[in-house]
Image 1 (cartoon, rainbow, N blue to C red):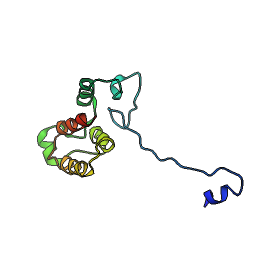
Image 2: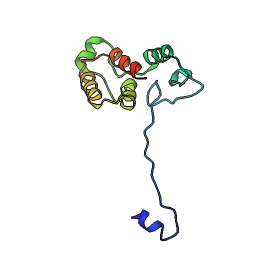
Image 3: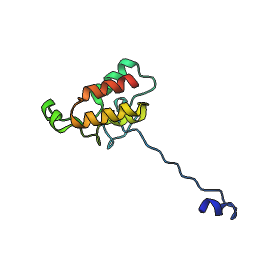
Image 4: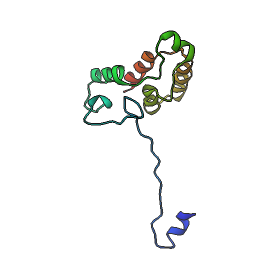
Length: 120
C-alpha cells in the first residue's frame, strides 16, 4: 500500500532487500575478518588452501565420537559446512539427502566437508 501512495506524495517508492550472510568458518557467532585469514575462504585461495581451511577451521555440528554421532546425528543449526552447502550446492535433492542423512548420523562430518570442498 505504501508503494502505491508514495508516488502520489512525491516520495520514492520504498524497497526492502532481504539477504542471507555466510557464517564465518568458526561459526555464526564469530565474524569473517581480514585480520584472521582462516575465518573465510578468499577468492585468491588455492584449492589446497580451501581444503585445509574447511577441514581444519570449519565448525562442525558433528558429535565428539563417531558412536555418538551415529546415534544422535549432527546439529545442523551450528554446522558451517552444511550452511555453506545451502549456498553452493545447486542440486536441491542432493542437499535434502545430505540434510536427512547427516542429521540422522548416516553421514560423517568429513564426508560433508568433502562435498563442500568439491563444490567450492
